[in-house]
Amino acid sequence: MTTRFGILVFPNVQQLDLTGPYEVFSAVRDAEVHLIWKDLAPLRSSTGLMLTPTATLEDCPPLDVLCVPGGGGVNPLMEDAVVLDFLRRRASEVRYLTSVCTGSLVLGAAGLVVGRKATSHWDAHDLLAHFGAIPTQGRVVRDGSLITAGGVTSGIDFGLVMVAELFGREAAESIQLAMEYAPAPPFQAGTPDEAPPAIVAATKSKLAPSRQAREEIVARVMRSRVTS
Image (cartoon, rainbow, N blue to C red; front, side, top):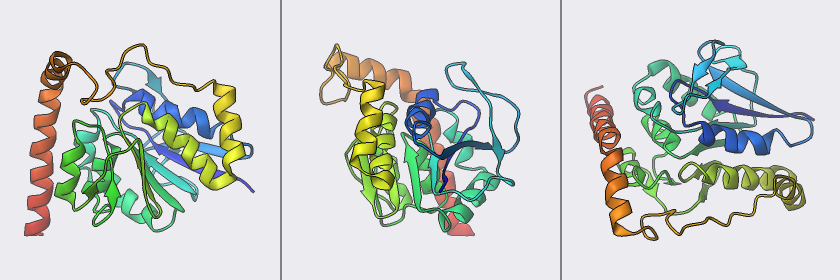
């Protein structure tokens, strides 16, 4: 039986948020992996890599897993009624609703994380609380059928966890081995707790404009809920 994975693709998506789990999912036998957007025109990721959707929001087939990756492009998605309506509809149909990095903010804007544990990139983690989620630290956080992953590289971890959930641990371990996924970073700077204070400060400064924009969007989304 075919297992269908759907990953939302959009302008300025963080490509590794998408391609990490895509690499894992595509290694599953008899799996289909769909890249979903409003149309089928190629899109530019935040790093310039071009990505081509394979299904539209309207003609996407039934899915077992729906994943929302993150990146700078999530900012407009949090106020995109068409995308949010699609997520709300499909959330009740899929076996697992998932995200990588700041994709969880889009799920939050759609009202799909209320009262549930969720995670995100460390620079957006606290914003989940505004959407009624329970911000939870972890590379991969599960709350029932909701599975969220932390920042960028955790999408690979998430993909392997998802494969183990659907097909068993041996299937996931075989894919991990084939990918030679054995992280051994050259520096201990992968989280704010590990990185030197000067690096943390510089990185936060670099991310500050996007962070401010997200705070403003979250505030607007929450105000619109109160007035609607």
